[in-house]
Amino acid sequence: MQWITIIFTFLISAISLHAQSGPPTLLKPNFQTGKTYRFITNNKVLMEPPGEAPRQITLEQHARYDVKPGTINLKGVSLRGYTEKLLVNIQSGQKSMTYDSLAKDNQQTTIGKHFESTVNRYVDLELDEKLRILSHQEGGRSVGATPLPGLPRFGPEELVQLIDSIPQGYSPDPVSVGDEWVLRGKRPVGELGELGFEISYKNLGFQKYEGNECLVIEFRGQMTGDITDESRRNVDFQGSRISGNLVYDPALGMTRYSEHHVAMVVQTPAKADNTKKPVPMEQRVTFKLVHIVDKK
Image 1 (cartoon, rainbow, N blue to C red):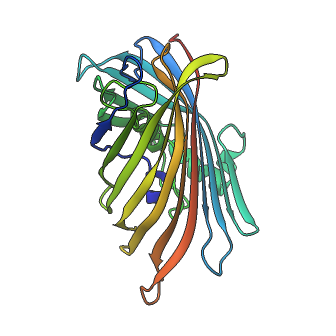
Image 2 (image 1 turned 60 degrees about the vertical axis):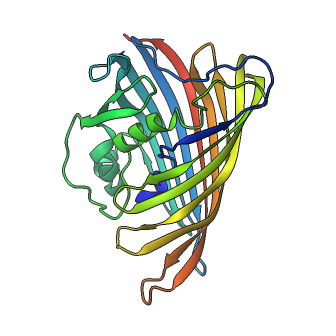
């Protein structure tokens, strides 16, 4: 399951291709010191193994980040991230499991104990001036081993991934309305292997988003490569399609909303003879800025 949650945590080199349409502007998200940022992310993954019941994981995470001056890079910032709310639903055929971090009986249920093992931990991050993560470290209440070792846990890792995703997609050079650029490269997926990406972006210009004048960037591309899953079996990501959009607010210097959609056929080996088995998969990830307030 590790590769599902980290599909979008990639850092890639960029090549910009510019059209001539008005004065170019550098679109650069940034965090302001002394502020608290709150975001909501939704991640929905659907897999349909041949001859088996569809499997679906839905995750909703409410994240908070308190911003202070950077300590490793004085031009950067320090963040402390918390999960303020986590909703998880896992469904396979007619069977389903649900977790709500605000429920009162989590310590009495097996799935509650599983997710409680990490959801209340925070993470400290150091970022440079380009929002690249220089370091991150978990902290907070420690708990024992999860009672469901085969099930993913959510919390601090997703807090890191959210920050990692914010600067992705923006051109390293100033752009104008109508400009297009291409980001391509490879991204290691832990120790499992690496995936290649080639994604085209286009600046569509200003549109109203919740009453705010924002720039909209659309993108589409593909992802290819092989990784090895937890059981050391080769998993082939071929023929995937990536599409979505970013909504950037120049007044705030931050992404207000983004949406990523991935559709692919994952060629996974069967357990018995290692023959390839095509498994259709879709993932939709949305990211929304809730508000920016002075840190109390």
